[in-house]
Image (cartoon, rainbow, N blue to C red; front, side, top):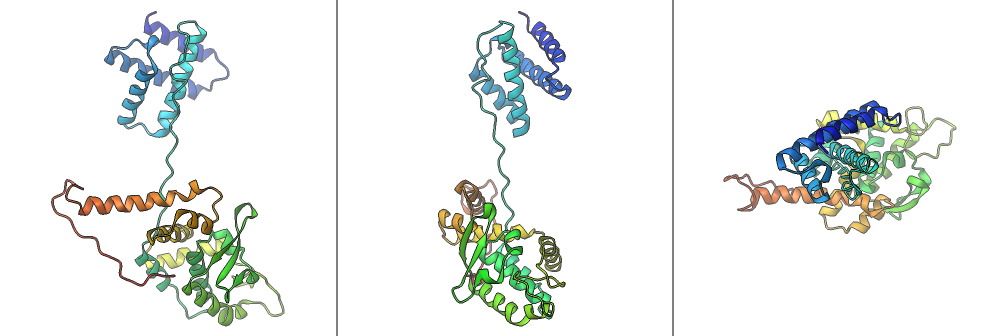
Length: 313
């Protein structure tokens, strides 16, 4: 049968189906017209095209700039079209049925450099009790890789400074014990001894470690607000969660194994932790491109500076 007739019949089928939304009909027809045009140029028969040829077509669409969402919709359109051909007895198989839709790639997490970490902490004013609280709060988040909700929910009784660990209640009420580094220990101790007593309201007992100006638990919104103010002072564009991303990435850069980082972050699935290895790989790729004789088409390169500042523990 003529391909143009097939296209008209398929469009009539889509328009007559109450189960297919109008926007989906447009998407399906647009994709099938793309396929028909490609088949014409490549001298394939639309109604008898095979799976390998469809893969070539999908590759063509990808090289043309189609992102994973567009490709996924396109593959759904192909499946629908060939189901229609089977229903109308134009063919007996669906060549698009064995083609998997592309999975969206997870965006790489934002990470602060060690220099940015130092600049951020240096920008916290320490001449007030709130500044001392902020220093302890963000040192602990970076030292332990805490989520903002975990920091906000931290109780005084969950931090064991002598043992240098904290008991963290994470997602799904999962509990984990994480070590606290030297900077975290020092600033939490300073805050507890010198600042927190002044933030407590007279005669009130409050279990939360980090307190607001009202003497109650510092909220996630309050943590976010203070972080933003400090970033503005340091001229850094970041989010609170960036400290957690930086914690994981800096550990891996220092030689930590993935399973250890997974345990410290409280990830149930190691696949979630593996995103940080992609950050490392991207940095390695950039270094290779800049320094290897065959790494880049550029003929002159600037040697990247090496961070010689003392690492936080």
